[in-house]
Length: 442
Image 1: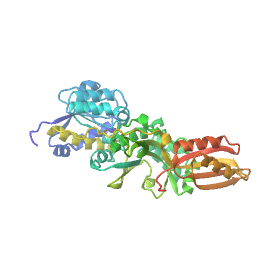
Image 2 (image 1 turned 90 degrees about the vertical axis):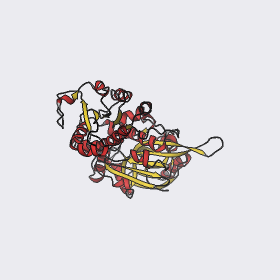
Image 3 (image 1 turned 120 degrees about the vertical axis):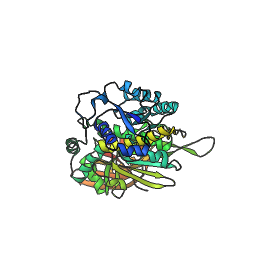
Image 4 (image 1 turned 30 degrees about the vertical axis):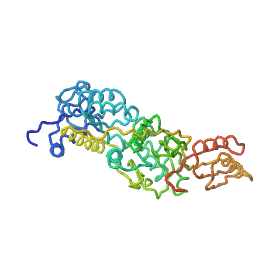
């Protein structure tokens, strides 16, 4: 390796993740060089402010506020983008690829919104675009989907991909905390931002779900295709009901192949893709139920490999930087050898199904009059819309009662029509909770 020309890396961003990338590139320089077959050196670090406090000491001659100038330099071989957001990240990545540099990014929002544009630019430039750190931090899940399972047929991906919401729901389950109390604790510990909207309303998880679905099912899926619900409406009562059922509430990202019922040329029905993010009850016996605190896990089901689970820290500077460095080593090795890794695989071009066609089970809590005939009327409303009831539990409270209904599988449209009818009934005071039930076999 002695005498090998160093590969030059431009780092865009020096925040929580970027600073750890810079640190690891310095501390592990010898090992990285041995793995790549050539030294890997930092050409520059683009930042918004030169005088901002940082978690790592960066030589002043490496810092620059001219990110576009940095990625356009002729001596830059690789670009690491960890600034996040849509712009200027998209323009900088496209400029880097056009200039002949391969790119490693952790930008889930950009990939979920405009991944095909980046893929096409990488293909045209003959360069790599890697993004393991965009989903689930240090957990290696994207490369297994892109490469390890390339010879298999993935049928379902079920995951906890947001640490903030998992921490909040875990505290509501284990400590009996309310949503606001658990959120404040998460913010105090640094698990949640001052504005937690992206996490608690499911935007972060939806972007990750789009990426997972795209890779698993070889189809282009964007964040706009993902049905999204957050956890801000999850109540302590929902959590207690889950406990009564031997279940726990989790915010799940779910992508699965679903039969559309339509055929092409008289052949068998072509499966479509259902992609959704929402809170759901899952049995405590399910592997995902034991994922605690701010950890992430992704459960993959495929025809040949069966069930696989990937678990670990889903966020944080060092864990995410670990995933970035893993990609960097691969991309640097490819660059040195004049080869490329796996590009976009969207050959299946499967349709993304509307949420109304998605089938699952439901937990519905209904406040009703406590008198004869109420249960029969409620059951009739379910039957009218084709929703079969699995169990019913009734708790009396003076002149009122609460019915807790768990259904068999039905479409989201059927359940929505049922709930709408229930709310119009004189005997129903309120439908206080509607939550999906996942991870069970009927």
